[in-house]
Length: 459
Image (cartoon, one colour):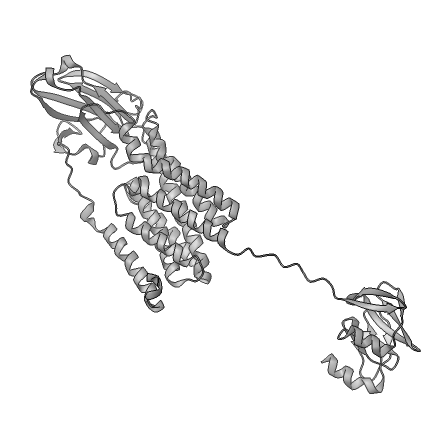
């Protein structure tokens, strides 16, 4: 018996909600926000009067020019491997080694007009002749005037050590994302083939676009202001994905779907007030996952179990480092593949054709006239035969008496007189004690022996 079936139905929703709430509380708890840095500290000088030791990746670069200094000790330059100063930052940079310039990335300036934006990633090799035994002073000057929105931590990495291959570290970090790109594209094609629904297809497209924006970091030559654009696109697409996830969940919540979507939109808007871009993205996704978790806990439908498992895994995996770079996209690809395969394996609903108009077979000698019931107006007895009058003005002589005709066309034809029978659907007016009128204006007499039965039929 599956684990889910062993849990009583009344306990499934509370357990699901408690697990999601625990993940959100752990994520919001500040214990992980100030993890100590293992990198050597730098002497950071936003201005000459306000220097301090610290981690460059936590500096806002609010001053016109920020100077960072650090001492690197070399025992024997002849036996020291090649060194480089590596800067990954949304800023222009200049590097010096023992007072001599070793490279520049753009032009550091005191204002926007004098600064030329550099690349987001830069590496400055240290010349052999610049190294000396003992202490070596490293100085990096940074300016960031071309950021079109405030960024709390523009410096992503500042290190001195053996030079690395430019793509090696990034490829190692983003290889899962590249794999997920292919999986998301494949699942999107599968969704289009099996027609899983517009919201699911749009959600897959939004996550795929987010993964593409995330993997664009592999292009190491773009100027640093474009890094803000990349982060903005990732956060925006995460918000759209959260709303689409809430839209899908709204189908499980039935009448509460619009409320769920409105609350999710509010939560996404609040997430955008957070200072860090990764936090905006992460909490927007958590907002959509929380809405979907509520719908999965209390909603109905075959998607309930799949959606609940996906968003619960999303909430817990969001606590792990590198979630936005890799596991988020791999998890989404698994979710989209699952709902596409479920849709494909579901029995195909054959559209039911509208019922054809009822037909009656009226004998005429050795022939059979197949007449639509709606075309019958009334029938009039003619000895052992009867004449049937049609809506288009024609009349047919039927080789059957009036009683036999009524039995052949029951319950549509109703006998109202010894010599007449009418199509009940064509009766427009039924006079008390008098004749009845058909829709085309023809007046038909009503016999006294048939009036009581006709009155009961009319009720």
